[in-house]
Image 1 (tube, rainbow, N blue to C red):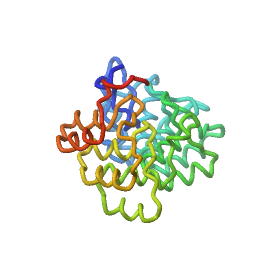
Image 2: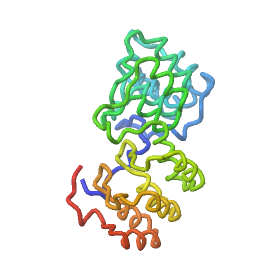
Image 3: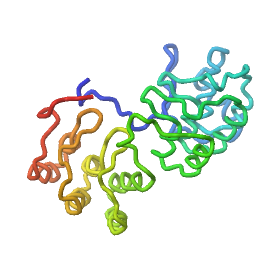
Image 4: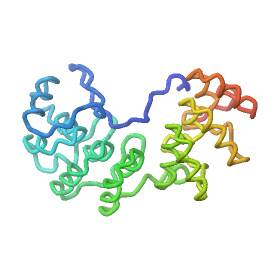
Length: 263
């Protein structure tokens, strides 16, 4: 897989696809469905009629946080514990990713053997999703239920402070980053895709943040690689941020094609 061909896995609350149906929308863009009638509208729109599509109904309800809609679906015993989408993501993954605490609690109330640490095809657990999206109430609840993050990226997994660094770098919030630096902020953190604050600030064109990161860390790795093998300079080139390209090259930045490619 080439760096340019990689899919954007950064929003992994995805929906199942059917060969005979139109592609379903990103669940992050779905309205929060509070009544069975609105859920029925989704059923009609996406032609969810047969019993074979019950799993899709459950996935839709989980992504939208629609407890009322789920209650109106006739389910066989233990069905909620078994349903997954094509990325092996469960209703718990989707509800946690979108911050639907009531739906998460409902799943645990309905499922005696619900696996709080079930893994999707990336190895991510529901707790990973809740941490990544900043849903603190869901994070707290999942931890109370025994939730843990995936063990295969312990170095890249960050605590709550680390996630805030990632967020502020991505949005270009230099004021927040300065405040965190005064509290001994560690900028050597990575998200679940091994992307650093430098990757994210570069990708979004925040030159001031990029300069600040180098300013506070004289050993900052300008050629750190994400899980696709991409460097910050790759991001700058891809997004067309010319001033950042110049700045990174002055500090030894190179593009991924000049580095050994590893996935």
